[in-house]
Image 1 (cartoon, rainbow, N blue to C red):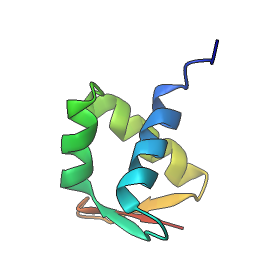
Image 2 (cartoon, one colour):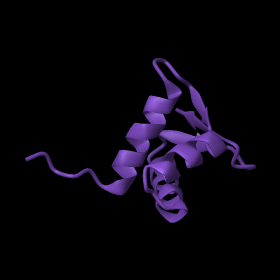
Image 3 (cartoon, rainbow, N blue to C red):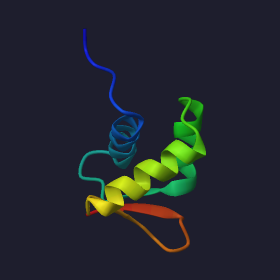
Image 4 (cartoon, helix red, strand yellow):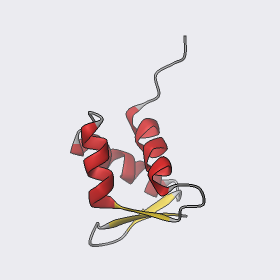
Length: 70
């Protein structure tokens, strides 16, 4: 049985999907819509963004309109 990824891992995977092949960034409002539709709460998304920002994997711009992959 495959282990269930942590919410932040799953969220990061979906963000990567939204970015597409070679995608450098994703519009955050669109990402929130997709993630919400998949059952993630805004709190989970926020925590995931903070976590991966801390790992220098992605950056959220100050106005929180886009997620850029580092």
